[in-house]
Image 1 (tube, rainbow, N blue to C red):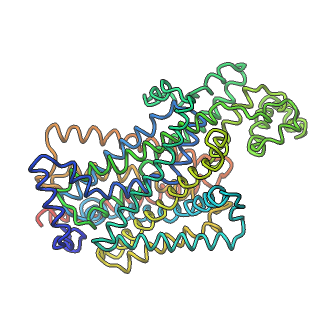
Image 2: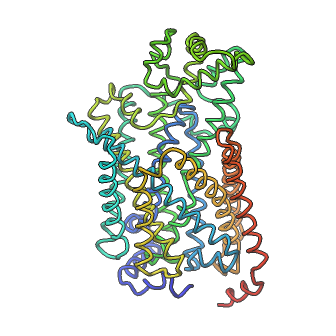
Image 3: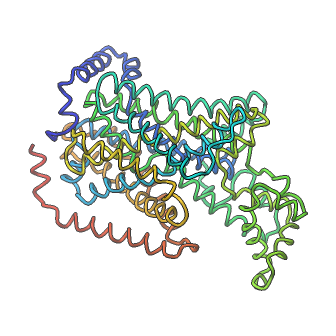
Length: 584
C-alpha cells in the first residue's frame, strides 16, 4: 500500500477503528444488516451524482419515445454499473492502493492519466448544466409559488444565484474533509437530499396510480429487455408508423430510431460515468475502509445508488410516458396553419414537418416556397403530426405543467421544483468533491487539503460560469469534447479494472478463483461489451454529425492522439516495474 494513501493515514483514527471492529463483530455474528445501514456512505455519493440533470433528461425522453417499453434499459445499465463499481471497490479495498497510482505502476500511465484528465473534464463541463438546472427549478417552479413572478432572465440575478449555490455547495463539501460530526452531517444531508428527490418523483407516480391512470401490466412488461428496440421504433409510435403509407414509413422510422438509439446511449451513460469510477475508490479510502469493508461496499452500492436511481428514473419514465408518449397537441392537430402556429411546441416541430414535406416533394423542394411547404404540412395526418411531436425534447418543467390538472398547479410546481433542484444541487456537490480528489492525485498528495480545496473551487467556478459558457456553439463543442473523450475512456477504465481483477500480481491471494472468478469475469465482460457498444455508437454519431462537419475531425483527433499515447505508454513501460511492485 502507498504510504501516503488515505487508508494508511487514517488507520489510527479511533472512529475508523471503531467502525472496523463493529463490522468484524457483525460479520462474526452473522448480523451485518444493521452495521451496513449504519456505516453506509460512498454509495449515496454515487447516487447523488447519478441522479443529475443527464439522468432526468434521458428518462424523460425515454418515456416520450418508448413509453414504458424502455424501462428495462436503466435497470440493465445500473446493474452493469454496480458490477463494475463492485469490482473497483474489491480491488481497492483488497490492496489498499490508490487506483491512479496502481494503474500507472502496474499497467500504463497513459491509462491512469487519461482516466484522471477525463474525470476532471467531465466534472467541470457537467457542472455547468447542473447550475442551469437549479436556476430553472427556482425560476420556473419554486419562486412562482404563491403568485411569485420567478427570478427572471437578468444576468446579474443568475450570477447572484450561482454564487450562492457555489458557496453553499462548497461549504457542505468541505464538511467531508473532516471525520467525526461534520462528516456525519454531510452524509445525513446527502441522504436527505437523495431521499427528497426519490419521494418527489415517486409521489407523482403514486398519485397517477391512485387516479387509475397507469397500466401496471405494461409497466411490468417494460422491465423485460428487448434488444430489437436498438433498430426498430417501439411503444405506440411503432404502431403509428406501421399504419402509414409505405413510402412514409422509412422517413419516420429512420428519425424515431435515431432519436431512440441516442437517448438509449445517453441513459446508459448517465447511469455510471467515468468520474463515478474515480469517486468510489477515493471516497472509500478517505474513510479508512479496507478489506473488512468489502461486503459493506457492495451493499452500499445496491441500496445507496442502484435502488434510488432505479426508483427515480423509472418514475420519471412512467410520468413522461403517461403525459407525452404518442400524445397529440390540440393546436398542432388542426388543419388550420394559423392555429397550428399557436402551439407551444411549434418552433420545435416546424423544421421536422418541413423535412417531411421536403421528402415528399423530392427535387421540387428546392424551388418550393416555405409558406407553401407549411400549407402542405398543415394537411398531414394526425398520426404524422404525433410522430413529429414525439421528436421534440421535453423537460421536467413542461412535465410539471402538463400534470398540473391532475396534481394541482401549486403541488406540481412544488414537487417538480424540489425534485429537480435536489438533483442539480446534489450533483454540483459531488462533482466538486470528485475534482478535489483528482487534484490531490495530480500532485501526488492524497492527504493534502490545499489541492483538494483548489479542485473543488475550480469545478464549482467553471460550473458557475454556465451563463457565459453553456450556450451557443461553445456549449456544443464543450459537450462534444467531454462526450467523446469520456465515452472512449469509460470502456478503457472498465477493461483496466477487469485486468486488475484478474491479476494475481496486484491482488495476490485476494484474487478470486474458481467459480467466483468465472462469475466475476462473465458479469464484467458483459459490462465491458455494453460500454464498448455504447461508446462506439456515440462517437460515430458525433463524428458523422452533418450539421457540424468539423466534429468529425475533432473526434477523430481525440481518438488518434490518445490511442497513440496509450501505445507509446505500453512500448516505453519498464519491463521490471511490475516485478518490483509485486515484491513489495
